[in-house]
Amino acid sequence: MSYDVVILGLGYVGLPLAQQAIRAGMSVLGFDVDVDESVVLSLAEGRSHVDDLSGTDVEKMLAGGFQPTTDETLIGQARTAVICVPTPLAEGDGPDLRAVLGATSAIGRNLRPGMLVVLESTTYPGTTDDEVRPRLEQLSGLTAGIDFHLAFSPERIDPGNAVYGAHNTPKVVGGYTPKCTDRAEAFYGRFVETVVRTRSTREAETAKLLENTYRHVNIALVNEMARFCHELDIDLWDVIRAAATKPFGFQAFYPGPGVGGHCIPIDPNYLSHNVRSKLGYPFRFVELAQEINTTMPAYVARRAQNLLNADGQAVRGATVLLLGITYKADIADQRESPAAPLARQLAALGATVAYHDPHVTTWDLDGVPVSRTDDLTGATAAADLVILVQNHREYDPDELARTAKTLLRHPRRDHDPRGPSVVIRPFRSGAGPLPLLRRRAVRFSRPFPVRGGRSPTATIPSRGAPRTPRVVPPARHRRAEIGGRARTLAGPARRPWPKGTTRSSPAGAARSEPRTELAVRYGTGWLRLGAFHRVPEKGLQAKVQRELSR
Ligand SMILES: NC(=O)c1ccc[n+]([C@@H]2O[C@H](COP(=O)([O-])OP(=O)(O)OC[C@H]3O[C@@H](n4cnc5c(N)ncnc54)[C@H](O)[C@@H]3O)[C@@H](O)[C@H]2O)c1
Image (cartoon, rainbow, N blue to C red):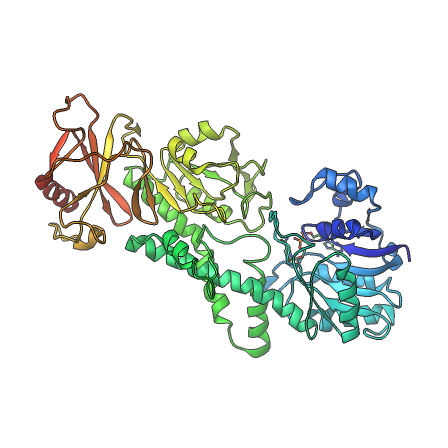
């Protein structure tokens, strides 16, 4: 046989696998069936279409003997065939197996005795034995486990992960027979450090779905916590940081604007669909997680609406700039990205949506192109609201916070100490920011009654705060709210304010000094009280009460 392995499907999974095999000294054939052959042609010319490989990597692969092709008859010249084709969702949320069955048929028509066939595409338990095997046997006249070997090995690739790649992420393999598992273990053992055997194909298939369901469910858990922590004025990021110090029994997950990519929002559905169709009852965790995660873009749009509202601005007519529209940071893959439903929601509310993303040159929503900008600083300063959707490494949140009028930041770069979810809003009046005003936020230690029938709990109590309004030291023009808790960003050092008064400037300072803008936290937004040179503290509560009662 001329090739050690043929890889069917040269995408995000197949191409890195081909690279690993070439590096291990194998001869590799790459088979793809894209209609206009663009994938195969561009690879043959040394161009890459996936994030983790550069054009230089592809050139090295070609130099190492990699042969991309659309000619299926060459498959019969390979000792091993690995299927890495897509498994999108079909109607009714089950997997669409057309690509898997198409690739299986291409192998079946060219299968030779002694070959090993491995399915890597993510799918529901039973696919390898019940769908792939009969088709291979029928088309080839050969018998699995006797004439050829068959196994499932889930792909665990994490695009953009600089630490764990194909060679050092343990590979799970489960064969149709123990001998099939032996063959698969020997094949992967040539270029993967650790190979983990399962009892059969079904355990390997289910292991992949358990991994992704675990992630999906835990992301949903923190996303739900993010909502109520915001309402309760609890800093969830601080909560997670504290919980993550437990050396056992806890793994940190972080909230975000939703889940994306091909795996997390989709794969758990295979399992729940499988459970429901075979056993007749729901897999409730998956369904609940799905419900929470898919509503996150709408939640973020609502937070955006509240922020604009707090500035006295409607979403309709506002310019909203989305930063990073891919499904995760530092990659170009936009599949299932929550940026799309978020942009749809904002557009439906009447916002003018634009985006900046160093990895994405064009973006359209339902066929309508979204306006793109290259000028990050200019667009950030000009937009009414900036939403940091994906924290690409090109973005500096602190710099964005300084430039943007209003910034809503959700995602956190893993291991980024700057990480917490930050909502930053300068106080604005009319059309523009008020750069000369210093501003303070007042908090009350406990709710107090207000006229006009509004809930006394409209103000958020600050745990441990004094009973009288507490004055947060002045920030220059920006204020950060971390998980609902106030934090001064770039302000002068705290001044010793004379007891009983809140002042914009030290005692005796001239009236020409910057004034202080006062606002009170109200529900999820802020109520602006106005700009003052000097406000006696005892008059402050009355003023807040008056404002809340209006
Ligand atoms: N992308 C990931 O991060 C990731 C991670 C783990 C698992 N997976 C799983 O791996 C599988 C492949 O995903 P991907 O991201 O590489 O998909 P992809 O869309 O990037 O690439 C798939 C390639 O397969 C080709 N193809 C389609 N039908 C074919 C056929 N019949 N024969 C040969 N080639 C065919 C397509 O033209 C495409 O080039 C999916 O089941 C996915 O769930 C993906």
